[in-house]
Image (cartoon, rainbow, N blue to C red; front, side, top):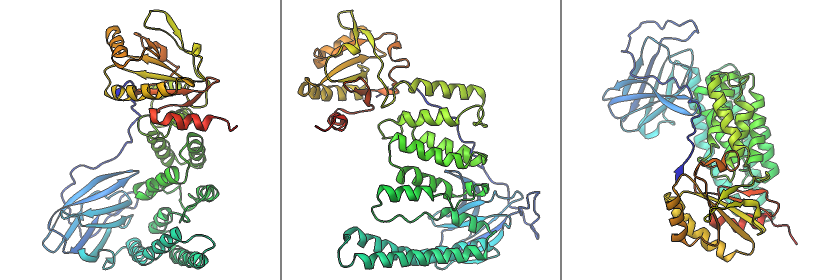
Amino acid sequence: MRSYLLYALFPFLFACAGDSEPPVAAATAPADERGLEQPDITVSIEGAAPGTVILVGQFMDQQFKADTAVADDRGTVHFQRAEPYEPGYYFAFFMDQTRADFLIDQDQTFTLTSKKSDMVGQMEVEGSTDNELLYESLQYDQEISPLLSSTDAMLQVVKPGQPDYQDLQSQRQQLLDSRADFYETSFAEHPESFYTSFRRAALLLQSPPNPDARQLSELRRGYWAGVDFDDDRLLNTPAIAGNLDRYISELTPQNADSINAAADELLQQVLDNKEYYRFFANAITLKYQPGRSEIMDPEAVYVHMIQQYFTRERAFWADSMMIYGLQNQADMMSHSLVGQAASNLIVPGLDGMSKRLFAEKAPYVIVFIYNPECDHCIEETPKLMEWSRKNKDRAAVYALALDTEDAKWKAFVEEFGLEDWTNVYDPSNQAIFKTYFVDTTPEMYLLDPDRKIIGKNLKSEELNAVIAAATPLQ
């Protein structure tokens, strides 16, 4: 594989702490201008290893070291410093990989006490309502989650119409209702707590077993109802990144049109919530950056996201040169998306004469773009050669060599016996500028009888399926 373009989306500006300040002993916990207390947090886990303990924080979809302290032989560690911690979700990580999770908000003086053998079940909290509520919910989940999992597993086996199906559905609904009642009662009693804001956001909507397209659509529409996009503290918890991954990867069909529609629906909700907008726009764009995604046409998502959301008016965190570079990059990709009319190519062949792509007479044309010294090209070429020999009546191959030398290209054609293909070489590499986007080689496009792009980023073994899907039923 040979890479031709390097993508450098602007990095997230993660505020990762380095070494912590020395502990500061204080009889009181003065607050800063935001009302955040000076931290004095004690975590005592019976059975946990002594030694260095890392306080791990969350920022969007990244974890970082917020602080370190030393646990004694009883598994007790104190996190104390002058500067408050940013509100969010944290965990203390001991040397034996024991971890104790907790929320930090304005009140940063509290104690957690438990046992390594049953961290959640034995947890006792002093001085923090948020964490009392958090562990009550975790303990409840420990009880109900196995019951839900068991019921869902049985529903995978029992089919509609069988005697036990309705009973299992009823049991499942009762469990879901009980779960909803537990949380709604807790939320109603503590409406202003950080716990409530976090837990509402973290509660994933429960999917039915084997959801159909209609059910998935309904789940997507109501998915973000529990998230308060005015609460930036949630970006310092795993809730938002976790929800985004499920929303865009699991509840959204993995094709460009569906992904773009789901992204638009979400981004429209946070246009006025800057930090959420920045995170969602970055995360979705990076996920479908060419070379990272397995979908057929990730460029269609990437182009859509850049052109719609990385503009001078909207990308408030990026300078004008970065925006120009991203927009220019998206424009290069935009001319060869699946569903678009293909571009003609006119490139010199083995005899020195120009060869027109649109002169190919076969119903389908494969545009195979490669480099003779690329390992993946050397691996893929004989596979495509075998396929093309079996399908020579319905598909031609227009093979374009890039970033090489005339002698190497001709030697490659001879070595693999590619004389049945239309072989061309462009020393300038200009033939694919704004025609056929290539980030790595080999690149394979498939054109239909109307010379429309119906496939890209393909392997030889995928060609039959793409042609079959595009062939009208007789």
